[in-house]
Every structure is written in C-alpha cells, then in structure tokens.
Amino acid sequence: MATTGTKSWAELKPAGASRIPEGLWLRCPGCASMIYRKQMETNQHVCPECAHHYRIGADERVRQLCDDGAFEPLFDDLRCVDPLKFKDLKTYKDRLAAEQKKTGRHEGVITGRAFIKGRQLVLGVLDLHFMMGTLSSVVGEKLTRAIELATAEDLPLVIVSGSGGARMQESGLSLMQMAKTSAALARFDDAKGLFISVLTDPTTGGVSASFAMLGDVIIAEPRALIGFAGPRVIQQTIRQELPPGFQTSEFLMESGMLDRVVDRRELRNEIARLIDYAGK
Image 1 (cartoon, rainbow, N blue to C red):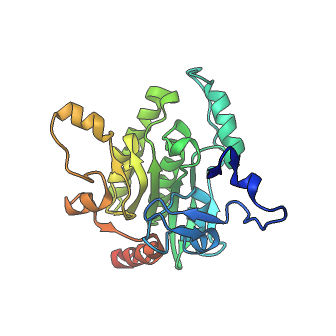
Image 2: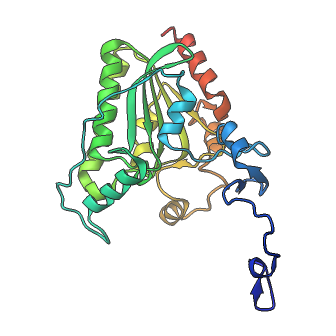
Image 3: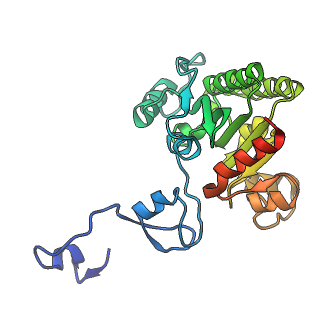
C-alpha cells in the first residue's frame, strides 16, 4: 500500500470518499490488465485481452459444457474413508472435512450423464478446488463406474482432467486407481467406445500418467501445464537442459502428444464435432 510519511493512503483520503468494493476487478496474471470480474465470468473465465484461461471448479465446468438442465449426476453416494489413518500436519479426516465444507461436495470429481449441444454422453470432471483434484480411491471408483456406464450404454465418454496427481494421503490405494481406470478404458476401447480426454491447467502426476493421456482424442486448453513430474525433478534426473515451455499444451501439441489445443470458449463446439465425426 502506498504511504506518505507514516500514514497510509486509507488514512489520508477525505472522509466519505467513494470506495470501489473489493473483488470487482482482477489483475490478469497473463497480461497484467485490469479486468472487470463480471466481464471475465461472462467470457467463461477467460481474459478478454490475452485469452489467459483461469482455473475453474467442476461445477462451473459442467455449467459451461452441458446444455441447460441436461446433466444428471451419478455415483454421489460414494464416500471416502481413511484406512491408513494418515496424519501429517492434520489428519486426513480433518482435511477431507475441510474440503467438503469448502466445496459442498464429498469428493474431487463429478460424474454423470450429460448432453452437450444435443449429443448424449457420459461426463467426468475433476475438481481442482477439492484437494487439487487429486486421484483418490473414490475419484478412481467414480470414474471407473462412469467408464463402465459409457461401455454398457454405448455412449461417448468425456473426462475433463485438472489435477495435482495421486493423493498422497492414500498412498498405494491412490496409485491403484491408475491401473483400475486404465483397465476400464481398455475394455471401453475394445467395445469401440469414443473417449475424448480434455486436459486443463494443471494435469500432472498419476492422472497424466494414466487415464488423462489415453483418449482417442486428447484436447488441451491453451497454455495448460501438463506433465508427470516438475521440471526441477526432471532436470535433476536426466541431467540435461530442458527446452522452455516443454510442459505447456502448445509444446506437447508440436511434439505429437496432443491432438488439439482448444480455447475454452470453443470447447462445446469441438466436443460436438468430434462426436459427430465418430458417428456416435
């Protein structure tokens, strides 16, 4: 805060001077422009100046992608437990309770039937706002059930990933979900199902090492961070200089790891086109 002498501007400005309510304006981390919050939200949480894509939660993602009133949540009865009695600075149970209170949901993924531009499909969306979208036993189970539903009903499958990876509080139980979801996707592939994987910022760790990179078509949002380990770990492991931006969606697209980089505002149209193209 700017000061004059020992007094702040808040202390010096005249009594009754107008004040702008906090939170109405945001400074874009991409271009440093000041953006009216309502304009940014109307623009699907994309900066109107530089197209920086803000991170969004699962509820907002479902609202943006699905037709109005055309999402039916499934498997919400599943609940996370703490078989390892894990504790670091907090117990796992306390962390879960805090995340559940913050987000209003029991776990870090939404799954269900949906329609996108009139096309019926099964949708799964990881929620960055719940323990950074980490892969837990319940997240893995809900995604597996969603994959099995798409297989049984011969529906396209769309999973939107945004995650910090496997959930450390569940240790090996979390890592098992990588194999379980991948095996379910193998059966889905054998049944000639269409899996569209959408990667958002960030998609890392065990999620990027399993189902997120197994799509028939892999789409990423612009400038999303995508990779398994952080650049420092990779550099220390291979002892080589890393190319700049090597974990961005654009770099991965050039390297043949992705099929599309799609602006969020065009994502609904792109998914609909891909479903039509596949004849699903």
